[in-house]
Image 1 (cartoon, rainbow, N blue to C red):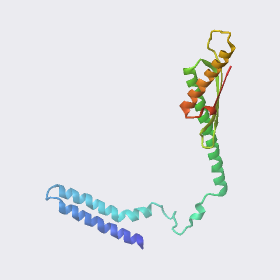
Image 2 (cartoon, rainbow, N blue to C red; image 1 turned 120 degrees about the horizontal axis):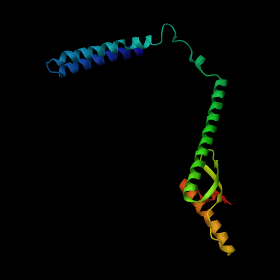
Image 3 (cartoon, rainbow, N blue to C red; image 1 turned 90 degrees about the horizontal axis):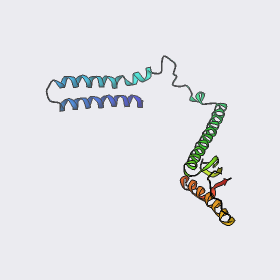
Image 4 (cartoon, helix red, strand yellow; image 1 turned 90 degrees about the vertical axis):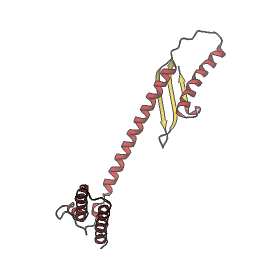
Length: 181
């Protein structure tokens, strides 16, 4: 019953709107074109419920049919969940691969480290938990005999690389491990 009441109300509102527009228009050639357009609009409003009923096809749609039959089965839900889990795993591995390529490129641009290997551990929310960088330092360094300073230079190089990666990715430096040979 509400559908019929809404339908009649819409027809009355459109007719009132058409008359209001007609009153506002001056007597000119444009008036008859506006009447034609408003007539088409009124016809569309009148036929709208009939067109929506005809959209369902000839007898294919039963109003009293239960929608429970259309509910997905438990097996279909499980298979869809498994597919989503596989997609999530693929996205995580692609993300880790892209991050490791990006970190390798940053290291190549800023240092002389070669044979770079990057291992990334992601958290449950795909945030970076730890970055492990392995590589070989190929810089030619003049040889000095002082052993204490040599150990400090190695540590400072590791520390600089660690701070660079940590600052670029917003990590704390203790989440970045650097092992250079």
